Length: 394
Image 1 (tube, rainbow, N blue to C red):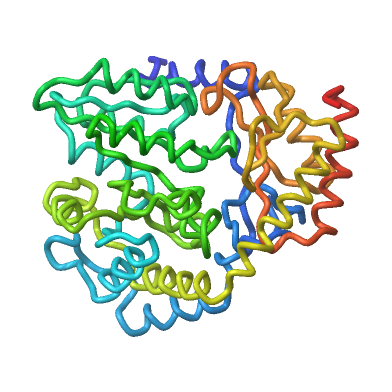
Image 2: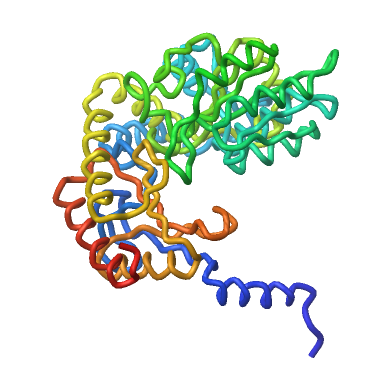
């Protein structure tokens, strides 16, 4: 029997299994909650990006339901033809105000917001100076732009300054780009320093606030608000699928940037716009963020409680400063074993292995939400204690 042209993938999958880096997603059976049911098992859920518990919030569900009944299940077109609805523009205006920007534009995801924007505002004549640990969507957007790409050591402002100096040319645009909160490390970008060097060189300053929106700043306004550098960041990127609890991405910035992306942002131009229910639920989430600042405060209270518990056990949590708290295991197989033992003890936190993180830096990545109770987290810490001792991690 002749071999299929794709049979080589079977061998490569077997290699992933042998290395302990194969991914086998678990299936959620119900709502995304602090205690949830995956693959038939009730567990404490430390794997979700649902920072503020909004994914299952009654007001968001009601808003989605009402919008679907009034406007339909889908928009039926791309934004630039017949798919721009009043709800889309309402959400964009609300997000612009939330972020302190002139205007905003909604994309289908945070990934497409990043990749579509970088590719739209730069050419092969330009240069991108990017943090070493920036998200994959930034990396892909940089590649799509065909601009020269220079990478600086993680959070090294002086190195970014040097690269901007070295790559300066007459007529050449420079983009300095960073995550606000780094998704695998849980640390925060040194934004004030980066803003200063961007201004020094006349570079475009861009920040991906996917894991900071709803988490940092007043009422969760993000990294720009957290550091008080309003008006000094040209492009703010974010997602609607993490702390906001729904789906989509956005760019906030000056009105001429948004108008340009309407004309040249390829994901915006060539993908059907967000369904009415999704858009209405995002608006409801913004209402809650502005009305209930205690959600963000509770998120940080729970985060401090859990971090202190991990540290007292002797775990290595890297440089985390946020509700993203990695627990470093080292080798891929050990991280997989840690995740498995925690799962057996009723705690869900998947292993993160190469190539998502560097070799030798495999971990389980825990994310705390405002809706976890101290009892949830105490039980999780006990599971970490038992698993860590069994694996000689603590």
